Amino acid sequence: MFMAVTCKKNDKVAAQLAGKVWLHSFEEDAEGLWVYRPNTYDFPASRGRTGFSLEPGGVFKRYEIAPADGLQEETGEWEQLEKGLVQIRMPEGSNPPVAYRIQVIQLKDDLLKVKRIE
Image 1 (cartoon, rainbow, N blue to C red):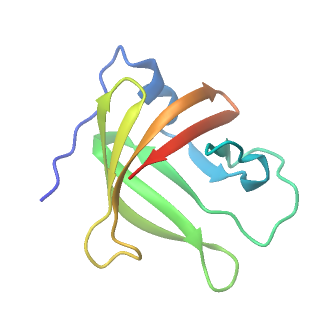
Image 2: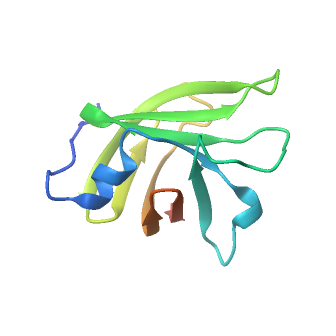
Image 3: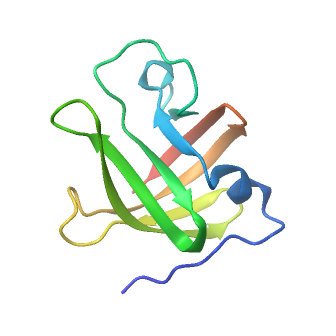
């Protein structure tokens, strides 16, 4: 069973993350950091991009590359642990079913750098 927790009103990090679709800008990954950009960003051409969104009520949506190069959505849950640290949980049956944390290293309107913590 998962426990959904919404972000606190005074937590700017969670508020900035929530409500956007963030796509992996793998060309910019460096030094163990994963780089994401909003889905409105002008990305260079690529076969496909993975991504995620944090929705109100603790709903996490993971976007994987679908067989026809579109996006396939899977739903899990997210929880704000502390400022800049988010717990992600995917249910049994998702591919892959994982639980992990992301530490927000840098966050701007059009840029998100995170470190994944297993």
